Length: 133
Image (cartoon, rainbow, N blue to C red):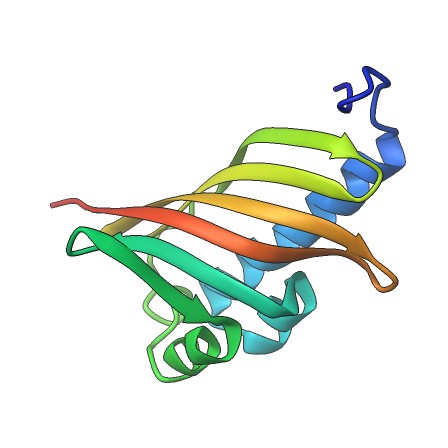
């Protein structure tokens, strides 16, 4: 896939980003804040629509919610997480659209990543959740 200059992203870059996304998926399913912390930059925030406005959740606030709820793995909930789109605009920025679930909640996430001195990290998550059955 080409970046904004038209040059294809290297296989190494794609693999590095995919590894971050897998860590995110594992952390989400397992309720493992350490894995989530490895994927999300310390300044990251999560955003979603709420009551006609935008809910802004800092990373640490989200981590506290994850710590206090039973994980999908502990409840033996079905796991289905997928990368739907990866757009790498250059050597330091990317957007990844994913689908994941914690039934009965099904998510579409738009993850913005930046390459830092520590590697690729998610700096922003905008998500939509749908409740089913």
